[in-house]
Amino acid sequence: MEPGFFSPADPGTFLRGLFDAAVAAADPMRVVPAALPPRPGGRVVVVGAGKASGRMAEAVEAAWGPCEGVVITRYGHARPTAGIEIVEAAHPVPDLAGAAATARILRLLEGLGEDDFVLALISGGGSALLVQPAGGITLDEKRRINSALLASGAPIGQVNTLRKHLSGVKGGQLAAAAWPARMLSLMISDVPGDDPAFIASGPTVGDVSTPAQALAILEQWSITPPDSVLAVLRGQSGVLPPGAKVLGRVDNRVIAAPARSLNAAADSARRAGCEVDILGDALEGEARELAAGHARLALARQAAMLPGAAPLVLLSGGECTVRQRGDGLGGPNAEYALALACALTGARGIHALACDTDGVDGAAEVAGAQVDPDTLARARAAGLDARAALARNDSHTFFAALGAQVVSGPTLTNVNDFRAILVQPPAYRGPADR
Image 1 (tube, one colour):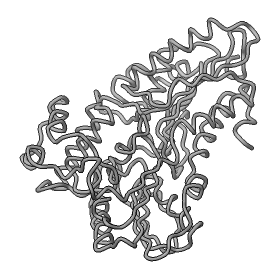
Image 2: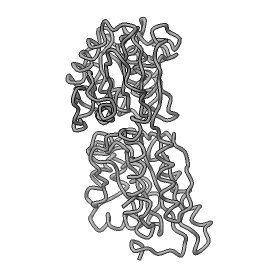
Image 3: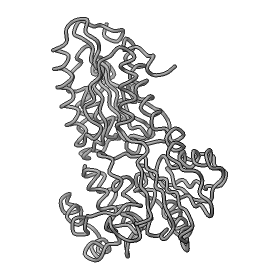
Image 4: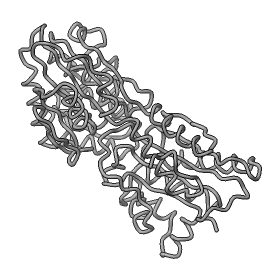
């Protein structure tokens, strides 16, 4: 049954249906074939990295037949292909498998000529999966910097800026390795604003940032780098300016983005008789702070509704961050959901879902969580303290104990966070509210 056929009278199923509609709109099997030209003559090489890259490669071969190439995806996200090799590696912290596969991609691009064609398949997660440390930086040193950045709560734009200047393959350097071949780079966006330069840290896109700016990001978040990182950031970066000659034969195209997925969910909600307000597809900030603001908005909108009014759905996307304060197990979407539950304090008629569209919230194999008016009451009955769990960043453990996690498995795409709040009019009492 299509998500749009679900009724808001069954809030949990309805919200999950909206999430499924958002994911389906970004399925590479839908969006890749529509973006592909006829298969070029001559040598065709397919490369790529990201959580959706395996599915993108599958879609390419469904349209073009078997191809030569290598793409890197997250463990558990591989797909069957006839010619393109799918390599699985670690995310969000890179590992040796990713480094070895990146080296193979670079070797594959060596010696290509003007008549050759490279198809790059780029999606979120590629920053960690496509890895070649710059200069004398070791993989272990890069892993430590990456982990510190993720724990700091730094915005994803800053994280990707630093990643570029510590890399030998990002910031246009993958495209440079293929020059003078023609390149078409198809991208599934998971970044606020859909800037191609920040999707997977822009391996096929030039960048105007400088090593000095990257160093300032480390200083801002009080991260002390090893000498090898300082040497790279105080020297000449390999990141290419947007007008570089070696980027002149690259065509970068964003083929799926958060806005399209939010619109698909909105269409489903409207077919179910709901009013919809899309708050934005590029919201950033700490998950708990964003949740507090959304709780205030939901309560205010409910207070203004007349009895018998159509239900309201508040949709938003973007990328939240979590500042690590405790030692719990959590992720941005589950932390948002937990903070939302705390802020709503059991308000009747308000239900919510927060999930990552790739099916992985943080480092856990969980997409996110659902919240209903009884979340806090059920937690108390189970001996759980919601605010204490939030204080130690233990949202996954909290929702697992309540059976309120959303476990989708790998969705094989990635258009970032998806959040939906269902607001019923004041007099409404659905099954979960009675």
